[in-house]
Length: 152
Image 1 (tube, helix red, strand yellow):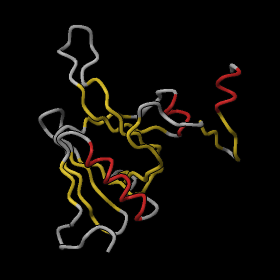
Image 2 (image 1 turned 180 degrees about the horizontal axis):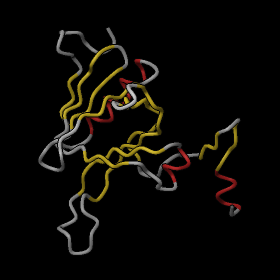
Image 3 (image 1 turned 60 degrees about the horizontal axis):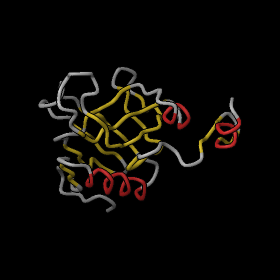
Image 4 (image 1 turned 30 degrees about the vertical axis):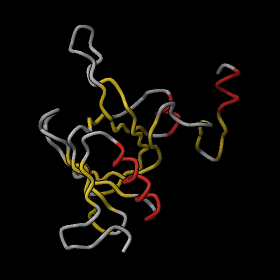
């Protein structure tokens, strides 16, 4: 490791964290993702950032869009080692219950899919909802199908 990278990282039991996090991130932090195959929650480090939608040379006009990416850890996220990138353009974010919410992607940008996510606290959920409200063309619904509002 070079000295700048070593100076920017701290070590705690079994974890390495990076001071300052992912450059340019609108929001970042740990979230639980429902693994539908295992029927269990898995913890990942999520990042919401504004990014080029099409980075392929000659592959379009380079529109910007907010992307939700997730990695195994903050260090993996800072180093760009993501499992998946989800384009949030025209996505629908919905409060489900407690600290659980869903993000349904738009079929306009890719195959439509729904991510079930959970925070540890209502305050974290509110922070993610506030960040997602800032993302262009994302619909955020803070009331669930039963009429229950976030945080009640």
